[in-house]
Length: 277
Image (cartoon, rainbow, N blue to C red; front, side):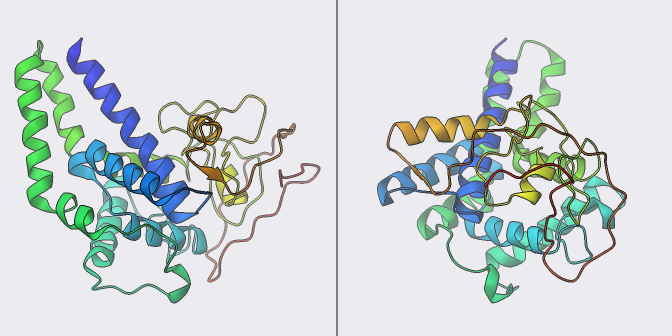
C-alpha cells in the first residue's frame, strides 16, 4: 500500500499547489499574503512538485496568454489546434522554456504581478535538481514497491506537472458540460473535481476568471477553494474577492466550437443565469 499512497499524495499535493500558488496566486492574484507566507508557499510548491516544478513567472505568462487567446491559434495550449495531447504539451513546453530563459518576450500586458525567487527557481527549476528528484523517487520505489505493476506509476512522478496540464487543458476544452456561454470551447469535465482540485471547471473559470471559487452550481465542488477558505480563516491569506454564496441553478447546453478570435474572449452569461459577482 505504500506506493499507491505515495503516488496519490504526490499527485494530490502537486496539483493542489499548482492550482493554489501558480494558478490562482501567480497568474490571477486572487488572494494576497505576507512576504514570509509567500516565500514559504513558493518553496513548498517547488519541493512538492519536485522534478516537474513550474516557474511561477513563466506559468503566469502562459496562463494569461491562454485566457487572452483561448482556443485561437495564439492560445499556447488549446486542443482546437493540436491533433493530440502530446503535440499540445510539446508546444506548451517549448513556449514555457522560452519564457524561463527569456528568449521569448510576451506582450507587456502579460508581465508583472507574479512572485519571483531566483534562488529557488534557478536551483529547483533546472535539470540537475529535476534529475535528483527523479533519483529520489526511484530509490523510494526500489525500497517500497511490492508489485511489478507499481513501477508503471514511477514515470508519472517525473512529469506530473505536464500531465496535470495535459488533462486540464485537453479535457477541459473538449469534454463535459457548460454553465456559461463563452467565446471559447471550455467545458466543466467533472462536477466534483477531486482529480485536479477544481482545475477541470474550465468553463466556469473562463466565464468568471477573477472568481476564486471555480464551482458555480450547487452540485459542484472546488477543493482548492475550500483550502483557500481555510487559509483565510487562519489569517494566512487575504482573499481579494469573495464570491457570492448563491450558486447557479440552471445548466446550459454545450455550444458549437467558437471561431478563432484575435482578442481576449469576453464571456456572456447564458440566458436566465446570473453570474456570481
